[in-house]
Image 1 (spheres, helix red, strand yellow):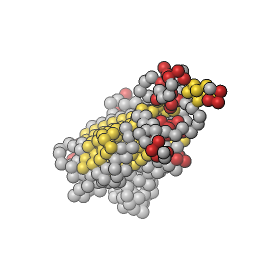
Image 2 (cartoon, one colour):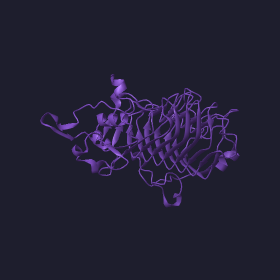
Image 3 (cartoon, one colour):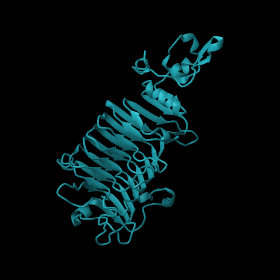
Length: 364
């Protein structure tokens, strides 16, 4: 029998002896994964009660990969883990990865993911995901990916060189939800949420804070079949300053299906602040922050209402408003002359004054 045959159907080759003292006849299971599966003679599984429940706890990378190989679908990370030397984590089945908060802190996880599951959801929850300025894209959808849902909730995300979500292939994805996340200091080598091909049934971006970095925030190309897009109650600060020909601002949606219905794309009750070009005279015509990318026959102007804008650049040829009409600008929201923030924004604190409660990320 080959190892391939032996591990078929979620079989695992363990990296260490699962027994307490086999040489002396003590076959007590000390391997957490083996204990959780209730394999072998039950008399030796003294920790049975510990592993009742939907989540499987891991505190090291070896156990994580063993759990993944064993088909665990709900993994709770209880310690800081660095996967950066392992390459992108390949996910081919249903998987939820969450973090256990300890002393008020989420576990720091240095990792990126390649998703290729068929008719399965993928979820990241309560994690501090850090690319260490070395990892490129946090999540990439492989060509064969067929996800029922992609959820990123209550995560801190920072220091990835390019994208948070990349859909470069003809993959299929159900609803994409980014909820309650704190995202900072992302690289500007790629577009932050970027679908170039395939299908995505909807995109929901609600109650998040995004500050520092990011070239183009949301890109959905013309060939992507996309449903409703909702960008609501988010705080955006100091984004899109990069001097690049590929800087397409906050909203760069060209999907014909997304623009087919009125108000299919909604940008509402967000705060946009401190939007400035990096150079006084950018070398690239598109090298400045903008709300909507340069108008063309395929660019969708979202339904924008009740947003707040503060400290935005309106210099001729480099205006935050880009090619929006006067009526579109007026409908988009209110331009403030005083900061809406009472928190120290340089320290990543975006607490808003009482007059502006109900705008931006609700955490503030």
